[in-house]
Each structure stands twice: as C-alpha cells, then as structure tokens.
Length: 507
Image 1: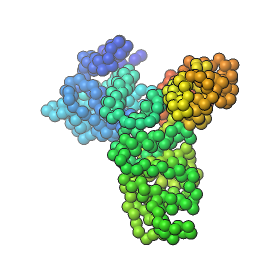
Image 2: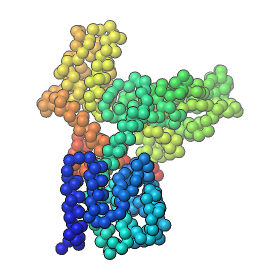
Image 3: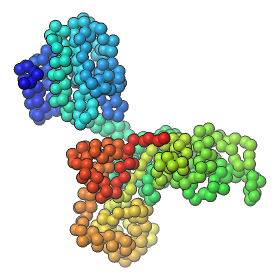
Image 4: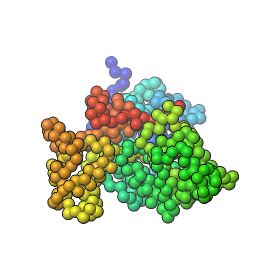
C-alpha cells in the first residue's frame, strides 16, 4: 500500500500530467509549485538550479516569494540550500526560528514568526547528479510527520528532475550566446567553420587582450603557429615584435645564447655582443614552438624568465628586465612527460595557464572543402596556373583520407595537384598515390562523400560528449543515449583518445 494519502497522490498525478504537456519548462515548474500550494499546503516554495560549472545554486522559480529583478545565489555548502546541493541529502527543519543555517536571502520571511514555520529542502536529481534544489515552508501546525513531508517533496523533486535539468541547459545556452555575442570579432588567417575551430576562435578572442601565457596543444601540421600569430595580432602587443623559436632545432649548447644573448668573448666564437630572442621580443610576443623538446637545463632557464621577467646574458653580470608575452606549443603530451620526469612540473604549470587544443584535420569535417578551395586559389595564383576547382571524385578522395599530416599534408597535396593539372580542374589522377590507394579501398567499402561527412559529424558528437563527461566513456554513452560498448567501438573506429579529456591531475 502507498505511504501517500489521496490528496498527495492526486497532487503527484496532476504534476506528472503537467510535465508531459507541451509548453515552456518554466511554465511547467511554476504550475508544479501552484499545485504544491493548492493541494499540499505549501506556504512558499522555491526551485534553485545548480550551475554545473561554478556549482553555485541560483534561485530560478518561486511561489509566494517575489524574486523579480533579484539575482539570488547560494555557494556550495552555503545555507540550507547550498548544504543540500553539496550533500545531495534532504534537510527538514521543524522550527525555522531555531535554525541558524537559514539565510532568508529573499527576505520573504523577515516579518513572519519563523517559529511557526517548518522548512523542507530536498535535492533535485537527474542522471544520478544534483541539478537543483526544491524547498518549501509550511505552517508548523499543519505538519504531523516531517519524514512524510520530506518523502512527498522528494517524490515531486524526482518528477521535475528532467525539467529542471532542461531549464538549466537553456539558461547555460543563453549565457553562452550572450558571451559569444560579446566576443569581439578577431582578425585571423585561420580557415574553418567546424565546431572545433569555432571553439578555438572563441578561445583566441577571449585570451588575446590579456598577457596570459598560452599553451597550444596539437599534432604536427594542425596550425599551432597560426593560433599563436592570431593571438598576437589581436592583442595590445600587435605593434610589437612576434618572435618565433623552434625549440626542437636548437642544440642544448646554443639554447642559452640564442634565448638570452651573450657578451663578446663569452665563449669561443663570440666575437661580438648579441641580444637574445627574449630581449628581441621585448614589448611583444615570443612563440616557443615544440617546447617539449627542450632539455631539462634549458627548461630551468626558461622557467626563470617566466617567474622573474628577468634574464642574464651569457658571460654578463648585468640583469635585463623583459616585458614579453609567452605562447608555447607542443605536439607532445606534457602531462605524461611530467609524470615520467622528462618535463618540469613547475614549468608546465607556468605554461598551462590557458590551454588551447588545436583539432586534427580528421576532426574538422567539412573544413577540408574550405581549405582545399583556399589552397587551390593560393597555388594557382602563385604558380601562374589556371586551376579553379577540384572534381567531385577527387574531392571524395580528400574527404575519405585520414590525413596523418593534417593541414600541412593537405596543403602539400594541393600544391602538387595544381602543378600537375593541365586544365582548370584537379582530377583524381593528380592527387598523390597514397590518396588514390585510399580511394580504391574506400570504393570497395562504398564510402561516398555523404558517409564521410556523416562520420565526421558523428566523431564530433562523440568528442563533445567525452569533453562533457571528462573522458568517462560510460557517462558519454548516457549523454548520447547509447551503450558504452557502442561508444568504445566508435572511439576505436575514429581513433579518439578519451584520456585527452580527463580532468587534469598531476602528481
């Protein structure tokens, strides 16, 4: 037999019907609060939604409380609402007048006798996590069993879990749209309108105005230098120098001299004084490409400049102060290098203030078409050729290829094709043999352009889910409404590394 009485069951039934009707989520929740008041004797009630990023709970829906124009928030653990959001456990207060945790942020009860009120607060769960908090107060003389009151309010919270989660997502999307609308347009040579590239452009726009150190991660050939140049070109330092350093090409014996300069006679062959690259970049930006290739000794010297903004040229007793923004890039997994003792943890922390991940060409879907058109125009003009387009079969080959060399490989491929093409169109025969072999293989498997684009989109969805789930494949499967086994198959099929999206933890 149910523990709820007739009126309580009727309220739950009515609320369930409200939530299945068409309409706005906020309207559904407001009608739910009306039902709690009408059938269950609730004096005042509130629904707070948990911000999944900041973990603050903001008051979103209320009945019997005027919240018009107010921005009421509870930090995790703050007050009764914050405590319930933090613990995920309900709280019931028989006498509100004796409860110190009650904050009354709305001021709705400041002129009331709180000793005559009981207060109930329960978590709202969706997919196993707290997404909000439902609270209500009732007159003490109408409460006969606190445990029973918590049970019925918890049942309501269970019913509205999906609606509260949805309303939270709507609010998050509104904030994101507002943030993007406030993001200024940036000048850049980066080509692409896929979601991964739009994310990169948004990050560039956000970080460009500051002097924050940026670490760009990505495979060789993905365009990390373009990101560094875009940050510099859209920053207040754009009038200053942009100095690029290929750390992988510098021998250990020359690192100190190249980066920090030297005095005349500092070593054999130092026939004159020379300024280092950090000093050359004063007032501008220095881009340390492939920084993961630096030796431990060189890492220590770079760390000192980052920490102290000062350097000492080789063979000199003088100290030089530099005003330089540092942007670093790597194709290595520096976290693994830190764990293996190959890269200094303190330098990694200094560099990784604002990380940007540069997606591979495989992750960028239809950007391949945009880049192909761009490179055709570029090399036709440069080489004096009349090539204007690429044939559909040749384009299918480009879309089906896995591009281990990323954008750089695509550019080289188009340059070669423009040279070979005698007319105004690039044909399949003008593409490298490696792509043609891939095309024959693809033809056997009946892979066309549409399927390739669908696969690219599916890969993008899986990557987004893994980002949201912090690399947890079970949670990613739930977000995509599929099974973990299917997700694991797709991850293997698309060569996705889920560890890349795990929360950053270093020893």
